[in-house]
Length: 459
Image (cartoon, rainbow, N blue to C red):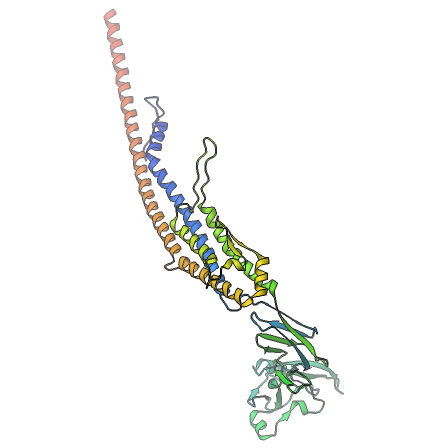
């Protein structure tokens, strides 16, 4: 590190002089740094645009589906029957009678204090007829219940207090219930091993003294077109009838003696909202590109014209043109503007909800076809530009990042060069100060010698 002897001999502010010289030397580096910062800003904006484009590609893919604009509302006339309709489900009205709901098989054992069987083993027999042996760690009701529930047999068990016996000992019952409803989940629990069950010598807990079957596992059942020659009974192991009608699920919570009307209707408001959400996302992306491409012109003396972050970027300009064309060019001779989509002369995309709703009511299939076609074109543009491997916008970002990396390397070299230059200047001025100091010392010495000679001559 150079030793500073700032102005010691020259009375000059050598530090200020060096700083001023370094400021001049640093000008190319400052310009390079500003260029790097500009590139980083562009990269950040391009990455944000790319993320928005990838999100749009996903939404566009969903919007190309044949049911994207076929939203449905589903209702029933009884709150004990709930209806769910998927998009594209047929519009219908039907009456159903709920004969019964699904129940879980459940038994309760007779009262006992503790199991004294030897060996202590129980066998669970499911509807599939496969025996599973359960061996509790002890004969206590709690241990038996835990073992039955943990055996993976599709049942749960709980020990329930049942008073006391004649000797004052606590009595317990076991309530054993199928984990799921339906006839196929019915079970039997035997006292004994699988061999004794097969031999018919094992005791069924549900038939022992004081025991009972609380509920018999049964399927839910509804009838369609009840009272007609076409009457049809439909059963379900659960209380949900999946696809009772195409794309329509029906869940029941109680039986009904009177028919329940189930209705699936077109949800025009929902379809319009779905279309609006998609178009709004496209419009927002186009508006963002337009803002980023607009230059701010100076309007007063001293002001400067400021370029937008995307001004002059041919890739972004081409993207804007491609998206605009995707939403306004005709499809099979039909202009998207007939469904409420329009782009004005400034490139602003708008959505006319009233026009779209009317077009959807007049020709739902035609509007769906146009909307799906627009979505497919938007998806193609979005994927072509935002693909993470070779997308046009992705490639543009990669190129900018490479340039920033190169500028960073140049800045590092400039930092080394400037550091060396400052050290050189500090050494130069330090040497100058040292030399001036020596000259001043010599001058003082000569002056003193001359003064001495003048004094001697005067005598």
